[in-house]
Amino acid sequence: MTTEQLLEIVNLVLTNNQKTAKPSVTPETRLREDLGMDSFLLAELTVRIEQMTGIDVFGDGLIDTVGELLGKLEVHV
Amino acid sequence: MSETLWFLVDGDTGNRIRYSELPSLISESNVYYPYLIAENLTAFVFNFIRALVANRPIVLLDADLTGAEVAELPGGSNLGVAESLPPIELNDVDSLLEAVANSSAEITLFTSGTTGIPKSVTHTVGTFLRSVKLSPESRNNVWGLTYCITHMAGLQVFFQALMNQNTIVNLFRYGRSEIRDLLERNSVSHLSGTPTFYRLQLPVITPLNGVRQVTIGGERSSNELFEQLGALFPSARFTNIYASTEAGAILRGQGELFTIDPSAEGFVRVEQGQLLIHESALGAGVPTDEAGWYHTGDVVEVVTDEPKTIRFVRRATETINIGGYKVNPHEVEDALVSHPEIRLAKVSGKPNSVLGNLLVAEIVRVPGGEIGEQEIRSYLAERLQSFKIPRMMSFRESLSMTKASKVRRTS
Image (cartoon, rainbow over all chains, first blue to last red):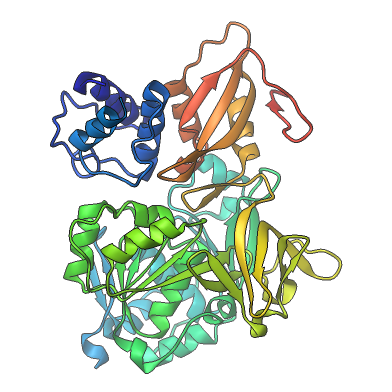
C-alpha cells in the first residue's frame, strides 16, 4: 500500500466521523495525537485496511505512526 | 488535613474543587434536576450529590443521548425540569459523606435491554457502597476516571473516591498523550477502565510508575493484554472486575479467572454454564426467574471448584459489547429501517483488535433507493448515541433469514 492509498482510507474514516480530511500524511504522522483518532476511528481504520490487504494492522497491539502502519503492511507483503 | 485535599480535577471545565469547598457548593443551590443531561462532569457531580443528600430520585443520562432517544425513555419528558429542595445543611465534609452514605435516593440507570428498548434499573447507594473499600491506607489514593460517570463502572469509581476523600481526575474521552500528562501531573495512583481504554494507552512509551492499582472490567480481556500492561504500569497490582448495570460490581479476579468467594455464593451461582445473580444483589426493575435469579446471559466455564473460579466464555444474548458499551442490535436495526429508503437491516458485531467488536450493518435498500453509508451515518447520529452507529455498512440485494436472527424490516 502506498502513502497515498493509506491517506485515502484515513480521510474516509475521518470524514465518516465528522472530522476534517487531511491534505497529507507523512511516516511521522501519529494516528492518535495528530489525526485525532479515538478507539472507534482506529477500529474502523484497521477494518478498512484489512478489507483491502487482509492484514489487521493492530492485530499485535496498537501502533503509533503512519510509518509503523505502512511497515506492518510491507512485512506481510 | 481536608483543607488541602482535591475532590475533582476536571480538565473539561478547568475546574479544580477541594473537599473543603464541597459542602458549601452543594448547599448553595436549592434546586436539582431529576433528569439531567449534564454539560460536564462538574455539573453532573453537583446535581448528583444534591439529589443524594436530599434523598431525591435521580435518573442518570449519558451526555451524548439524542433527543429521539430521551423521548423514548420513561419520564424523558421531564428532561431539564428543575425541582426545588428544602435547604441543605452540611457543616463539613464528614456530614456530607454521612448524608451520602445514608441516602435513600433512588438512582436509575438504563441498560441496553433485550428488545431494543432501553430498560431502567433502579439502585440505592447501597449497591455502590457494598464494594467500596474504606481504609486509612486508601486516604491518599488519586483516581483516574476513565469511564462515563453515568455508567455503573464510573459510579463505582466515584463512590470509592468520594467516601475515601480521594481526588478524582477526569480522563474520560481524553487522548493518550493528554492522559499520560494528567496521570503524571496529578500523581494518579488508581485506574479503572475497559480493556479498550488500556489498549489505547499502548504501546509503552515510558513506564507510568505512579500507578499502583489497575482495575480492568466491562469487556473480556486477555492474558496478552495483562502482560503488555505490566510493562506500562510496572508498580501496579492488577485486578479484573465483573460488574453490570443490574447488580454493580459482583466478582473480582486475576487475569482471566474470577473467584466466587464463599461470601458471594448466596447471590452468585452458575447454572447450565450461565452466571446467575440473586435478586438480593440486584437493583429494582431487573427481570428474574421464579426463584429470584437474574440470568445474566454471560456464559462461563467453571475452572476449579474449591475455591470456585470461573472464566467468561461469551454472551448468550444478542447484546454486542463494543469497547465496554453494550449495544442491542435491534435498537439499531429499528433506527435503520425507520429511514424510508431502507427496507431491511441486520446489525452484528465483527471481532476487532481495538474495540473487541466493531458494529457492522447489512442493509437492503427499497427498490430505487440510493442512500449511501455517509448519509445513513448522519441519519443515525440524530437518533442514536455515537457508540450505537455501525462503522461498516454493506449493501445487499437480500438478507438471509434464519430462526436465530430475525431481520428487522420496514413495517
